Length: 119
Image 1 (cartoon, rainbow, N blue to C red):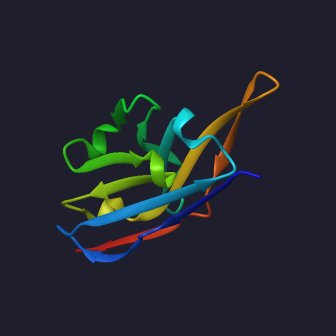
Image 2 (cartoon, rainbow, N blue to C red):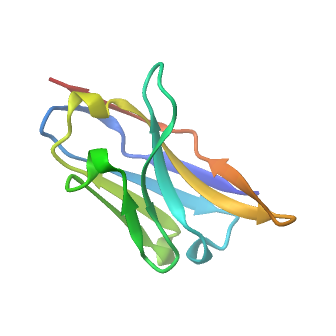
């Protein structure tokens, strides 16, 4: 059973920093791309950053230069360090991985962690 458990969200002032963590179980963690998405009220869920099993990273334009995604395969954990936070970063942040089942990718999500940035 795949489980993704996020932590590290909270309320910060603009310009502050947060480090989100996502610990996975039930998967061969080191073999999977891990991603962070976010969803603000009334908006669609959007990709924030991803890291492949080869540690190749990808960032959405809105966080480039302000966020760093990393992974610790020994701890089955992926991190998202966010700096210079802005009020528009306020959202629920979700951990994601995709697993092939019968040749088709299925999305697995954590429960989400709230990030609130005040001006």
